[in-house]
Amino acid sequence: MPKKEIEIRIRNLNIYSINKKQKYSHILKDVSLDIPKNRLTSIIGPSGCGKTTLLKSINRLHDIQENIRVEGQIFIGDEDIYNTRRQVNELRRKVGLIAQRPYPLPANIYDNVAFGPRLHGKRKKSELDDIVESCLKRTYLWEEIKDRLKEPAVALSIGQQQRLCIARALAVEPEVILCDEITSALDPISSEKIESLLLALRQDYTIVMVSHVLRQARRLSDYVVFLYFGEVVEAGSAKEFFEFPRDQRTKNYISGIMPGL
Amino acid sequence: MNKYIKESIFRVLMIISVFIVIAFLVIIIGVNIVKGGIVLINEPAVIFTAPGPKYLLGGEGGILHAILGSILMVIPSTCIACAASYLIALFLQVDYIKNRFSNKLRVVFDVLWGIPSIIYGIFILNILIVTNRRGSLGAGIITLALLQMPVIVRYMDEALNSVPDGIRESAYSLGATRLETAFTTAKYALPGIIAGILIGMGRAMGDAASVIFTSGAGNSMPKGVSKSVSSLPVLIFQQANSFYPSVREHAYAASFVLIIIIIILNTISRICSKHFQKYTAGSDR
Image (cartoon, rainbow over all chains, first blue to last red; front, top):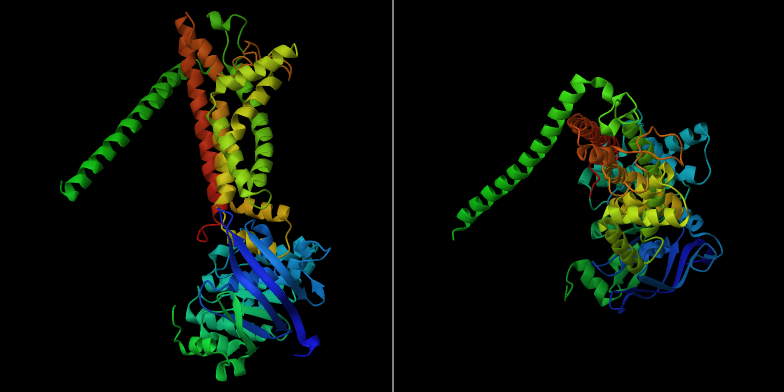
């Protein structure tokens, strides 16, 4: 891959978790990856192989957990996010995370979207109104909820809540969006809406998605990374990955024969 | 024994214990309300008039000084305790200190919670003696703040702990600092926090032992921060000790007022919790 197309470079990333008896367990083993800009990259693999850990390390969310140690480098653009003078929250602003289940903040719909811009110093009502409207339009929510912006966000259906979470993440103008199995709690119709939303968003954002569903990864992704027990087994463009897998473990995983699982 | 027989035996036991406890509560509250109500109907002026100089000796007057004293002591002390507890509770969260230390601090607060209130009173009394001061409104406020702080801290801490990690993570991933995240999670935990504050306030409102030495417990209207005040529980104690039946009757009126204040506090807390729950209901996972 040419260098200018790469958004995130992960080099020799090792993540350990420390349990109560001070024993280490190695979650990610020497992961090195290139994630392309303005493309949708899927991370697939069996449960417990470190997909979510990898995703959260891009956002430095492990900082708030005391029992996780991160070693290695992650570059976003040219900046090593684990070795920089900038404040962590400035870094996190550039990387939005959307969780498996929607967690609307305890406020009304408008304030949920406006929360991020307000944190970063946008206070003018007209400016906030514009941001809220455009973000809700981008997530196809505006038509559905434009009359109920002052209602509590938890009153929305779960699929709408998930799109609201995406709108909330878009409102701070990130460069990278991390999606952690964002359709797994949703019904098929909501999932479909979210999927088409992701496809539209990848024009402008670098999206990294964790998925359990192979078919979904196949439908949506440009690039695929296969993680297996903390190691990157194979990474490449989606077409190559699904049609001509090189590694035997990848072949088995795709075809559904995974010995020992 | 057949498991269905066991089931019905336990059911009967449960119903009996609920009945016993509720019966006692109803009797206690009922007696106070009925007897206090009778006194108040006969002489409604009791709650509006200041006590005369010989009030506790059967003289003229009412219990206004104690009602005002209670309010003047409890509200500022609750404000102080809330501010301190809120900061402590935020500090106890994982984001600021390590779990090991916060768990040890929690034990400390549990112990403080369990300490009888007279110990707090004696502690402040000692300080008053060393600094050569008299019992006063200010000292009472400090004592009551200390008394209710452990309760409020533990309640707030539990409420903040029950906030799903996802809320915290979403605030962080939007670029919030630790403080901004803490405010967001606090908003989610608000029903629990309010419950804690009201329970602490109730503890302070109903406590006699801690203020009996520290607030002066005099028989005059509250005049200033450094002057002596009385409070309802202390007054009830004094009235109930009296030789004069008319004064002892007034103790019921004071209990009536105290119970009404506690009921009002509880109602306010319910209403507040309900109001803020609309932002969290349904997302409680």
